[in-house]
Structures are given as structure tokens and as C-alpha cells.
Image 1 (cartoon, rainbow over the protein chains, first blue to last red):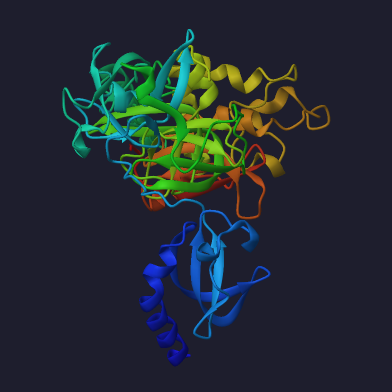
Image 2: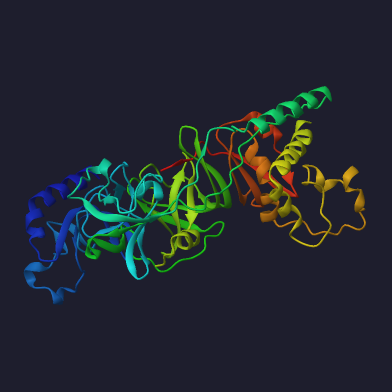
Length: 332
Length: 133
């Protein structure tokens, strides 16, 4: 086997330029020959072609010979090979799944294109496009986001159009009456021999459904309806328990998961002592990291089901897309 | 058993602070309301004390849907130390369950969690702190 490999490699280094000169060949390498879809133990010189064509359709000099000095060749169709542009790079037009951000944040992900009143908008999170409520409508949005080198004015490609404020609760209960009542009842409970105790908790007047915002591209031609490594959206669908999911995000790229929990109420830490409670969320497993916020979450048939916004080391929290659309008055 | 005492007391306190919380418990059908919120052991034993208005023979109330059970108990569960999420998922046996997410091991909170609520398994899982990404 080592001899076989050495001879195939030696042969390849001699013939590489000659093979790549053929019009259809885009890559050459050494690999096991695949015959009728099954990998054989025979080493071969593998030629990747943009399109596999019958010999008759190719001129003599563009044909790949069956064998080279006794080493078999194999021809596989890969299509044209393009450089994968980093998601943190500048993209024009910018597709879903690349870095984006308000000028005062680090970076998040451009989710997908949506429409509001017939106008094309880009969808992401409030904490990506509106700096967690701190932004003003009309603020510049950069692609890539500032952490990835996005700078004003060159990378300014959209303006904040609208966001849904996140209701955040600061710190533990500050209600003196509640704390006092709890102490009194705890003292009584102690006298009565019960080991149960109360503590005052802050009641949240509003539960959040979404962390979302939209921005208006300065030029509609600077955005693309594609999502990196995913393609185009095929509509929306309601997420159900067990549904297969995927997302395309700035940091972890294309990842997959399943809906592990629905109807989730979750407390999300937006900073020291600043908690926001979200209800009716979708929970998936580990399929994201910092910078993936704003990713569109799809089912396995490219139906949009949610907007990724939060997570822990082993979970991902996703807004239901129906709540996002209703809150912002948008559609596909 | 600590859980028996703590959970109803917490319920009472929360209901007192948030009157609207009392509603979901009894609004799903016209059956007479059950106790304040079913306590952990309800499934296997008839109600005692305050449940006197309904005898075991006359209650044929269907168990609440898991969504309703989760909603009714959620304020109590979210108030326990270290609880960061409550949702509906599957337990290890594949049965619909109320899943309680913890920010760490939280042995004391785990000890306070009932095995079931309104007949649905309650499963604790460590999810860690949830942050925007």
C-alpha cells in the first residue's frame, strides 16, 4: 500500500499541470477509486470536473485517460469550486448568515430578508441591530459588524428601521412591603414549626416574546435573499417538538439540532443583574455561540421557524417566527 | 418532606401577589376547581381537607393538558433558586414532561422539585446561565 501511494503521488506531481490544463478539470488529487458508487481499495488519480461528460463530447486533449502509467484515474463531478468567503468578511450583496451589527455592538448575524409594507428589510435581533434598546431609529448598521472590522462610513449598509424593546428586570426584589411581609410570614412559619420559607420576588409586568429588529438596506441591491450554505427560504412553518432545525450563523456557520422543548419560559441575563424573561420560546441543543445571534432558524426543508437570540453552553433559545412577524408587522 | 410544605406556601404567596395567576388553573373547563395547585402527590391520592366540596366519586375531571399544567405551576418553579427555564419536552422515557432548567447542579432546588405535577413527569436539567449570543 505505501508503495502504491508513493507511486500515485509521484505520478500526480508529474502529471498535475497536464491534467489541470484540460478544460473541464478543476482539481486533482490521490484517492480510492469509486466504481458504481462504491469505494474500492484501488488508489487512483482523482480528477474533479465541473461536469461529467461522455468522451464523445470532449476533444481528445480534454479527455482524462483511463489510466496514467498503470495507475487508474477516477473522474468525479464537483461543479465549479469557489473560494468560501469568510462570514466575517464584507459581502455585497450580503446574504443571510454573515456578520452584521449596530455601530456600538460587537457583531451578530444577518438573519434573512423580510418585507414590511412591500419594502425589503433585514431581520436580526434587537441586541444586534438596536444595541439592546439603546439605539435610535435610523442608526447605522454595519456589515461586517464592528468586531469584524466594519467601520463607518465604508461598511454602513443599512439603517435601523424598527425594534421591539426588551423588558429587562434589574436585580432582585426591591419591594420593601413584599420583603417585609415575607420576613413576617417566615418568622410565623418558624414559630409554627414549618420549615417552609418565603422570599420576595420581583414580579415582571411584561413577559418578552421576541428579541428582534429590522434594518432598511441603503441599497436593495446590497442584500441577497440567499442564506449562506442554506439557499433560499421556502416559507414559514410552526416549530413542533422534535422538529429538525438548522441555522446559518456568523460564528459557528451551518449547524443542525432539534426542537428539544417548546412553550419555554426562560430568564436571559442581558448583563450583571439585568434579566429579561422570555415566554413561548423554542429550545434546541448546542448549535450556536456568541455572534450567531440573529440567525434565521429553519426546518430541514428551508421553512423559516424562528430567530436565534440566546443560549447557554448546551442550549439555544429561539423566538418563534410567528411572534417576530406579528411584533414587527413583517412577512416574507 | 420539604417539598410538600414549600410548594403550596410559595403558591399562596405568588397567588396573593399576582391575582391573575389564579385564573389559568381553573379556566380550562367548567369542572369545579381542584385545590390551589395540585400538590406533588396528587396523582395517587384523593384530595384531603380543602378539597371536601368534591368527593372522589364525583370528580371525573380529565387531567389538564400539559400546557395548562406547566402554566399553572410555572410561577412556583421559576421562583426556586437557580431555575432559569421551564418548558415542555420529553423525559428520558420519551414521555411528555415539564423540563426545569437549572443554572448549575443546585441540589437543594432539585430536592424541592416534585417527581410529577398534575400527573406529568418533572425533569431537572442543567442548562447553565442563558445569555444573548
